[in-house]
Length: 433
Image 1: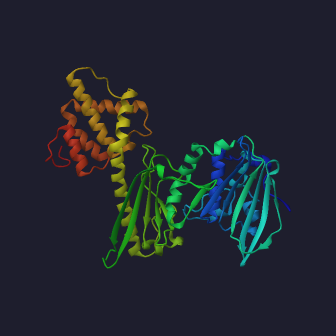
Image 2: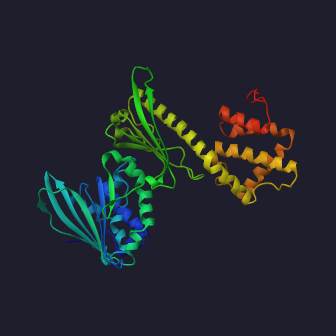
């Protein structure tokens, strides 16, 4: 049965569909996880010459409910998923572009879905052709027994794409980058992606891990909660922003909260997974999308939650500073010198010491806050460094520390290290310079 959509073929083509086949396939994988799948299989049917007959993406999710077709297939830039107000890793697509993205490299997409409705298993087929995306064809639904719910989308008439592209290390690395954080989040729930039968691995993207346990107490001290905190630093950018993922005792995510380290100043790619029965009492209707603060209605739990976030920020701050000190700062200093941002120095011993002192000071400042050079015009960077160099040559060098303290918060250790660079006495009281 042919059904018309509320769109035109031209409107779809001009709406910003993915331009990369990897992104198209990722869209269909996310659709499976959106439907509560735990397993997604990609099957590439090709011959010895690399010609692709078809690409299939299958999942064991809940299937596509027949009554939702006018919304999920009949409207473009619209989706039933967009009504989800909760920030969650389990709902990714919200504009409905994914179902049309096949047209980048295939002439037709056919969905075969099995869904449970009113206690009965039903199956039906949906088809969209590349040249007439303003229509979709739907078969009559029929009853089935002893089968699992799920959906398989088969992309036929593949053009401009060779099987070597989808079997390359680049494709595998992209999928690991896009989904590794999600598979790790749901590692205890059996979430898996398979490509031609081989499970997608992502452990090669993990650069550093840390696992620890915290116990936080209620304001009155009469109850306590244990939190398992799993920190991961990835060696490249991942397919999500940087979050604290909050999981309940069943190891399922109940919410995600942006970490305070989402700037692009450095390549500090991280995820923090927090598991506790504390989140079993999570009440979705109480979440504040704008602030992520009001996860709980009770005052006691709100206090514990705020204390948890404070501990997480402090923990991640230490991890970032460790990463910057061990990895990023040397790169930044070399960049400043290579691009000619440093003042001009001669070959004398005095100039050598001037340069060493300036670089040591810039290193400490960059470790404390790596955003210091991010988004700043090059002329301003030269000016800042020039002024610092001038101050270091005069008796006014002692005034650098109080100026810094007004701009960025310093710990006692950080203040002590800067004083040593400026050759200031350690017993100097804060603010007395």
